[in-house]
Length: 382
Image (cartoon, rainbow, N blue to C red; front, side, top):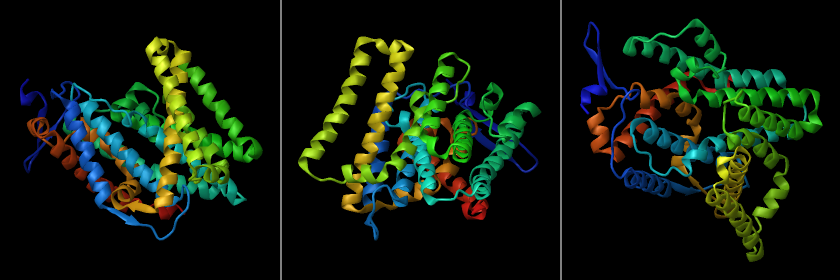
């Protein structure tokens, strides 16, 4: 396939802008799994060499939360790099569930809010507008301008209004950015949390799980399409972890061999359940497919708690993960169109040097994210 099938340029009075578009054609890269392995190894090396001792230490603290966000956003970008540029996707085990980590962390943060006593609804909404919507609106304008200028593509006022409102359930909005469903589901959870906090403060957890169950049923009936089963349940799971933080901390910070054995047994049990569903082919049925994803969410949550407990005992922090975690939201709302629609790199470079070009793209996205974060400091909404 010719490079001209991917590479485009837009003339203007001063010159031209070159970019690659992968909406119609994807690159072919044999043995993508090996390149993916190299990318992950390099990232692990960067994490390791940036490790330093923490001054303070507690289980599931702010520092750990930010680092988990950094880990999650890396694997989200990695997954979309393979899925939307190449026709062969390597095994993306953690990448498939990275978005669930964001929902778990969000649910956890909102669970902690309930421990602060009086809830400031005005402050909560104001903070979300500055933290979520202002960067989101800037990206919306940017993508609309780039679509018009580079792709000669326009969007209806109906679609622009809906996506600007955070509603990304129609096909027209997914054309702007396919990953925006995450924002819509997150905003739904914010609404459910605030409503529950106001009307039924003692039954927030129950309401969250009831809403999650309703969304899963609606997905089965094909009248709801945002988030898979594990992504839908992740926010309530995070909230539950926050509500039981003291007990969970005692259990997971216990360093006895017996306790470690119990943790391993529970993890293995969930893994065996996943394998049984896969091997028997029961995952072709919605009920068992949902059960499999619930088991995977439990493995993810349990693995997260084990990882955080080990980190708390060792008391280390990675500067790389912490840095990426601080700009994880900006990276998320920026990365997809610049990978898929207006990629700044030539296809031949990406194909011949996939590992290096992934990190070049990541660095470009990080620069854009830093600019966006500078324009929209989160403390303005505090």
